[in-house]
Amino acid sequence: MYRFIAYGGRMTNRSPRIVIALVAGLALVAGLGGCGKGEPAATPSATATTPFTVPTSSAEPTSILSGRPSANGPVLALKMDNTNRSLPHIGLVDADVVYIQQVEGGVSRLALIYSTTIPTKVAPIRSARETDTELLPMYGPIAFGFSGSVDAVARQVKRVGLIDVSAETYGGGYARLSSRPAPYNQYAKPAKLIKQAGGSAKPKYVGFTFGALPLGGRKASGVTITYPGARITFKYKTSTGRWNYYLGGVQDTSDQGAVSASTLVIQSVKLSNTGRDDVAGNPVPKSRTVGSGKAIAIRDGRYYKLTWSRPTVSSPTRWLYQGKDFPMKAGQVWVALLDAQRTPKFTGTAS
Image (cartoon, rainbow, N blue to C red; front, side, top):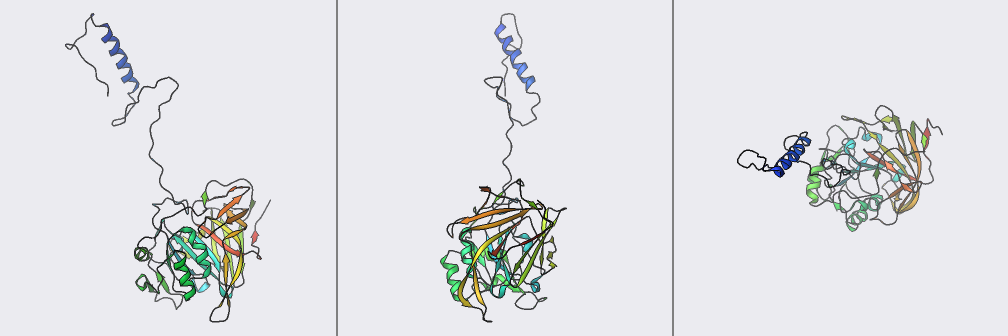
């Protein structure tokens, strides 16, 4: 604020310096007349070439896991069934990241990562596997909810620093749906599991970067991923810019709309044998997510050939395209862990 000093309330011919100061001051006030009430006045620049810029508010925080607006609260991982008897999935659309894993018998399971939005219910919840104890530690000491596990896996969960909030350790965080048969009816109460964990880690960089669609790639309208006992398809919907999810030819939906991915990454991995079998005698596989290999990223009606690398269990997974981090599209990210011996099939492709 500028102040003018009046001498006896009037000017005289005996005060030329004051007149000059007043004229200069009035000119400055006129130049600042565009400032609104409460806005700070601009400080005159030292030179005429330095522009005046109005400070802007900081950008809204976004999720480091999905690129969506987020307060970046605690992270919770949950295991979910992924057979047709589990459809429609409950609470799946709220996850930031979804992993597809192969388990015994060649069927698939899902590992869900929540932080941005915590739903009231997630179902159906299933058991943990060795794949989880290698995959999830890159998120840090997060809460991990699942129906149960064999003793060897339970010990690994603790050893790698995950916080066990399974149904076996905290039954109060789970319940059963009367509308579905067991074992497809158990649901988790995420808010209770996060509270029970008492210190679940907040989001950290796990290798995802977000940005505009890069040049290159090939067009595609659909992709099918086959496991020995499961067929999974994603179909691109132009009106939403997302890839709708189908399991065994059946579209997965929810009360919030179609289950869909903003970005899908197919990660070629090595499968190893854990050395144990399930109750039916099927060997239990483990998807190796530490190491390096090939990958395919799919977004906005195009797909791109990448490489991936992750040197240790605590390291992020880097997704490189032409030597640079591939930019995911903001929204739910899916990662399909696929045996490197298998190849996805695209439809609607063009050079």
